[in-house]
Amino acid sequence: MLYNFIMILFSILVPTIIIKEPIKKIINKENIKEVIKSDKYNIIAYFLIVLGCLVRSIGISSYPMGLNVDEASSGYEAFSILNFGIDRNGNSFPVFLEAWGSGQNVLYSYLMIPFVKLLGLNIISTRLPMVLLGCLSLFIWYKLLDKIENKKFAIIGLAFLVICPWHIMKSRWGLESNIFPDLILYAIFFLVLFMQKEKACYFYIASIILGITGYAYGTSYFFLPIFCMILYIYLLYTKKAKFKNILISFLIILIIALPIMLYVVVNTFDLQEFKIGIFTVPKLPVNRYEEQTSLFSGNLLENVIRNFVNGITILLLQNDGLIWNNIPGFGMFYIISLPLTLIGLFDNFKNRNKYKDLFNIWFIVAFFLLFVFKEVNINRINILIFPLVYYTALGINMIFKTYKKFFIVIIFIYSVLFISFMGTYFLKQEKNYVFVDNIEQVIKYVDDLEVKDIYMEYAFKEPYIYVLYYTQTNPYEFVKTVKYFDDTKIGRFDNIKEFGKYHFYIPDKTGKTEKAAYVIKKDSKLNLKENNYIIKEFDKYIVLYDGEINDEK
Image 1 (cartoon, rainbow, N blue to C red):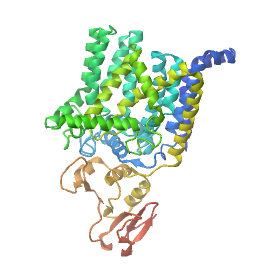
Image 2: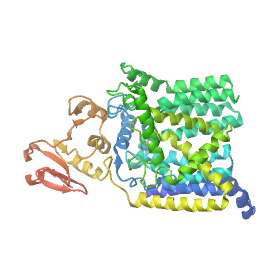
Image 3: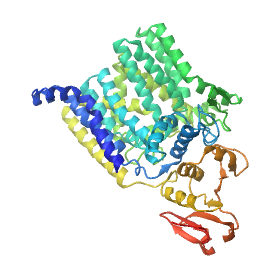
């Protein structure tokens, strides 16, 4: 409740930076009607951003319901690095998280650290950085569109992003890869400032952001070098940057991204991990980015064509079958938007200018990734979505210019779709395997029992990470005691059998003399209840333990 109150205040007060000029005029007792007339676009933008911030921030502890397995992982890593200087695999300040064995992007965990320090490790501190980035993107988006076009178009683009299902959904939970498109957006904004104001500092700020994106998501390993190469050629060709500026920008990106580049080299050529000062460049048991791309496959042409067909299908249907990425019937940016997207895409390439070309470069390079990645889903092509939202806004703007009466119909249709989407999102949540709810109380309850062993039924994805998250286990203890089902790290995900007093299986034989507790689902087929244990029931789980155990709950 306190969080929601604070976020309501945040959503109302922070965006006032957009209307600081009209506020000053009103304070100076200028005519209110004249102020509204002269600053109407900024005033409209203010209310749109307030709405956008509210729908991205309110109730994030409950919507989406439950903590995602990747959220729990990145959150625990933030806690471990903050308090112990290592991740759960014992790596000091890693440049990439070993996580499940196949790795996890590290940047979001580092961004989370001050929130964990301030609020503790919980679902709010885990999701809040993504919420704030999503809200910041609304402001940056409006300013960017204003600079490359005009305020009228900026309002159209802002309104569309505010109600965009993809951006709302991804801003409300902490999937670490979803900060990648926002960071590229910020870089584009500073590139436009550089091109307009001809101040190199903006170019270098953009370069810093581009370098940081290497730690945001694995797709950046392919996107970033191609994007920068085309960008540098374009800036030199249009004479918007001198060779000196390009060289400094390249060096900035190279220095910042060097550790993650070394990580790629280590894991591609099967080299030993090493440290750069306190930072670890880890060697993973599995090279996941090679698994997810076709560049290292035998049937390259066949796989590339298949990847492209799968990617295009997802874009056309705006659905990858993953309920946490899109809600069926609405898509990433509403299914009815496709014709408008194509209209805007055609217009932007036809009526090019030096600022619009930045979006075209972004789109072309991101589109190339459709050929590269297999098992495509919306997360893996998230870098494509901002350009598509931009082209859709252009299409809407063209309708406004050509058929003003029909524009009212478009506003009505999108308003209905937005209200329907929000109603579906908040009132008809679908439960799924990778968002685990109602487990925090169970873990904290059983952790306080005076037992030697705790056995948990493997009833949801990677239960060990939720135990680490909610008990805030010392990572040194985890590293020292962890065991695997196959006595080694294998595959894309570590199969953790046990650590400390926690065992993630139910033994064949159970007995009251073991001084053990058991956690099973209510609908479990296991018949432990027949052993006359004391039973503590929770919403979805049951804890069973020997009555002789001192339980003061």
